[in-house]
Amino acid sequence: MIIALAANVGIAVAKFVAAAITGSSAMLTEGVHSLVDSTNQLLLMYGQKRAAKPADALHPAGYGRELYFWSFVVALLVFALGAGVSVYEGVLHFLEPEPAVSPLIAYGVLAIAFALEGGSTVAAFREFDAARGDQSWLQALISTKDATTVIVLLENGAAMAGILIAAVGLALSQVTGDPRFDGVASVLIGVLLGVVALFLAREAKGLLIGEAADPELIAGIRRATTREGITGVGEIMTIHNAPEQIVAAVNVDFDNRLNAGDVERIIDAIERDLQAEFPSIYRVYIRPHEDAGMKFGETRGLAST
Image (cartoon, rainbow, N blue to C red; front, side):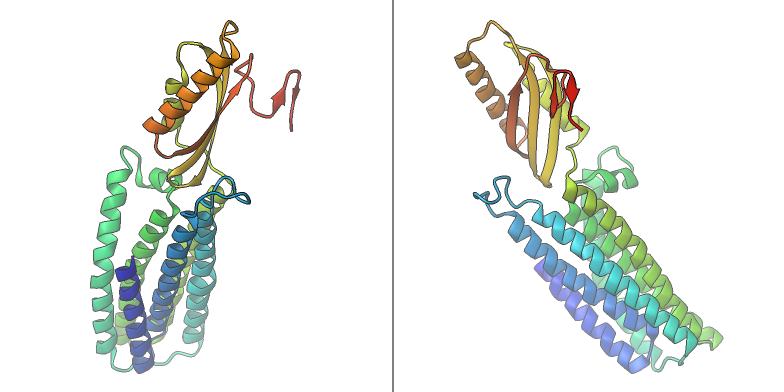
């Protein structure tokens, strides 16, 4: 990620220099886009470092959700700075158009940026494609709990699309002699970033307030919990604190013939087996109850609201 950050900073500087020389609105927008990307990478690196902190007395469940918080901040930055500045600059250039000077410089910078962004984008797409399994791309993007992967994937994709839009806008301005096409390209880049930002904010919000684990993992927990001495497995509650940090609580019904020592040994065995089979499970809580079908937070005859 450090190499990608350095490349993004270099690309941003090159785009700003090209924008200053050529006067291209789309090029300035792309410079802001790369600057926002660089800032976002710094925030994600900071979030990953904070999320790795061990649990303490103030945060007994750990700091995993810090990554989701900073992912939400990234979404806000993409919307406020990336999309906002792009649309503003595009509208301004459309109302007061100025022809671009030395467009070859802009094309050269865009070509270099496209090549640099292309390498990391292809790698991110391949990694995500291998991990999505039988899911469609949209299903995988919505269901994944790895906010960092989604951000990198969508930001890189938006960067590639933005470069193409900027190049087309600049070309149309040259061919038609109407510099307003450059402003239109800037607005389109802003709209693209706005859509990406809204999607990222939606996903980060869901993870931040707590999302359950994948149904396959929940089914695996039910299977691993079912054993001798347990007559029923009820509700299983799971929450992601981080992409690979899950807290699970299982409502079970023990055989009434077991004594307290037997129950303790079974609970200990379940916890060890679950954490061995599913390393992403950070904490396991087994709730003994005669009616294993009851939900967490319910009492007999009265459900909590």
